[in-house]
Length: 611
Image (cartoon, rainbow, N blue to C red; front, top):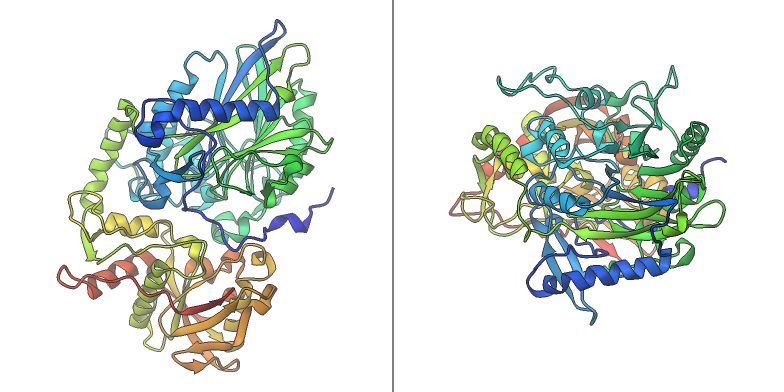
């Protein structure tokens, strides 16, 4: 069946990649406040899930299976801060409570506890384990995260788009091990051995040979019970990663690829199949005890179409990419309910899937499958082996990470639910200031919102003091090592770029660029498509945009290559490649703030929004 274009995008304005998310259940241990009723909350959520998806018992011809899943971990080894380190618990009266969650030391403890007493358990992930990572991992090309996942007991990982941030060759090194080709090994006493688990990339193939870059699937033998796992990333990956790193690769349709390998597994006698899909959706409610409506009505986004087209032989879909939390059912091609899950991001949650395996049919009993998201709270003990691992890498990173580079008077953050954010303005301003050191004629800078990964927080993260911004904190804001580039663009091209924010591949989920000071326009969200950009409202330093004039524009290297659905950026002329974007941010913070005069958050008033 051909790919349905309609499923590629959602009608939501933006992805809440770091916002508070609701969860399906809480971990069962002694907790304060709302957490004190944790055990009952978990039982209630499990009971609700069981009522919807069907109970099962252990019979002579069936055995119990457990699948523990995470997604979009993004190297969050230390407890993540800000909104990216919290989840929301909703009480029966409708009130909510934010709970701090995440950190690999707690994740390891939670997963080990969940596995205890389970004869057949497997731990899996649906992509973006590495990439867009905090400095503790990113500074070392994410070797610390791979080592941590080895210790956590990861069994299978499906590839995500961020696994390609440093290119396909680096992804292969993460799988196979070995020293980095440029930075070498980081210590004399150890060598990076790579992932102990397979990284699956069924729909990423070489254009010439058509063979997958990595293994398309793996079969886990759980005490005589064989379960197949197929891993795919979103077909649109080339539009959101640097093209240089994936030259010669092709990304195929997710459902078509899964269907192909489901049939292959069946021919090998493996009927029990779970798909790990790095593409996701958006639940209609963020309440932790919310059950999705029948026929997938409670879930929107690309994953719905993928689920409806994925072979009925697949027993459950573990998904990711949208950083949302959900446990929903979407009908398979035969009209039968099938579980589709996602566990938010940053290791704040893990999903527990339980099911029965029928020895006679060698398949999972579909009506037995149930799932629940559980909080990785910070009231449980830390896993000592992970604490030791973090300490090892932290000692290497400390001298670099703790260096002060600026001062802020308040939190400077982002909010993916609104078009413009103070942090986006700050980063755009920093790139404009740096670009003018390369070419004084530069007039504006544009920044993609997905390149901003966390907030600048006023409260001290260590012993540096409140309001002090360290290099490590700036690294976490911009961890991609993009360069600041310059190019000439006409006014007509600039207008087209603004329209590409809300049309074409970005129409369903707009990617509103963050803009530097002096560049203003109106975004009318009551309109549709490209018309959302009010053309005659665009101003550059107070002057109307001249469609025939040439402007000198700064952008990062990702946008310069046409990334994120902005092909017009790649049409720029007279290009100049500058230094790293986070070095530009460092220079801006150092040059525009001091302990006596800390930097305030920009007003975020450059884009006028009509709703």
